[in-house]
Image (cartoon, rainbow, N blue to C red; front, side, top):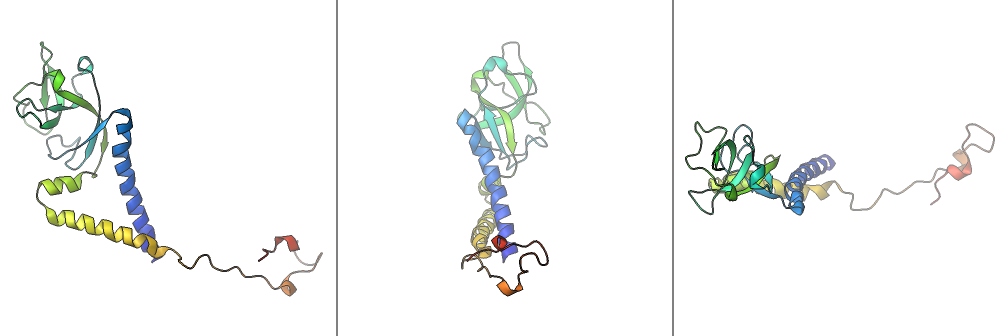
Length: 188
C-alpha cells in the first residue's frame, strides 16, 4: 500500500505542479488559454495551456504566437503565428499546421496577448469535454479520485513505531569494547 500511496502522491504532485505553472503567471497579468484545436501543431498541441503576456501593438513582430479576438467571430479567440505585417499595420496570421494564412487580417488592437509559456496536457479534460468524449473525462476523474484516496493508504495511522530500549546489561561497560557511552542510548 505504501508504494501505491507514493505513486499517487507523485501523480497528484505532478498534476498540481502543471496547474500551478498555469495559474501563477496571472499574478503578473498573464492569462492562460486552453488550446482546443490542432492548428498550431507541432509547436502547440490540443490540450496544452498557453499562458499569454500582454503586449503592445507596436512590439508585435513576425514569428510571434499571439492570441487575438477573431475579427470574423467577435467573442471567439484564436492563437496563431504572425506571418506578415501589412503596410497599414494589420497582422496576417496562420496556424502552423494550416496550409494557408488566415483569410482575414487582424488589427493590432484585437491582440490580447503573446504566447510566453506552454504547459502540456493540463487542458485535455476541456478538449475532451468540448469534443463530447465524456468517457475520457470520466476516466480522468476516476483516476484523480483513486489517487486522492490512495494517498492516505500508505500513512501509518497508529503513529510512529515504538522505540525499544537496549538492555543495559548488553552495553559495554566504560572502557570495555567499543566507544559506546551511556549518553548515546535513547532515553524513553
